[in-house]
Image 1: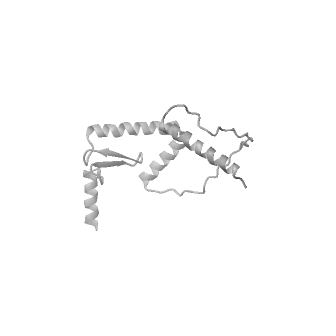
Image 2: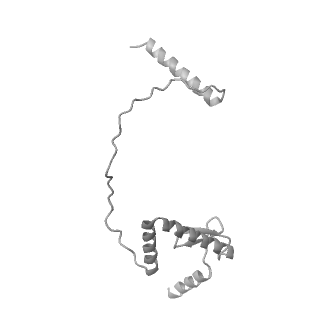
Image 3: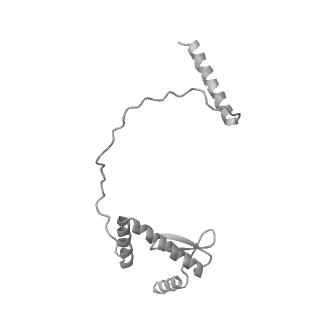
Length: 144
């Protein structure tokens, strides 16, 4: 088992990309928690530059939000040290001011469509509205 582990470690050092099911290769950047597509098992200089640019954008985004930045830094440290933090108790968020909805009058909508063009959807809407009006008036006439 020790020989197999050393062979896998050697392969990991030589080839950073992993083959995808549909073909091609992918690289997982654990700092960004993001997969990148690559042409081969090892990234080219242009692909490495792209990974670095994406990481710079990621860091800029994290700096904009201090709370998420602190969390990302802590997670990065935990990944490097190998410790897994306990999730702790769930956070309960309760709003301080909840607006009470006001009663609104329901808007009276016309039964028939308002379109005047000759498109199929407009014609179909007019036709179905006409059928509903006919059936409704017929039901009233034959009432209980």
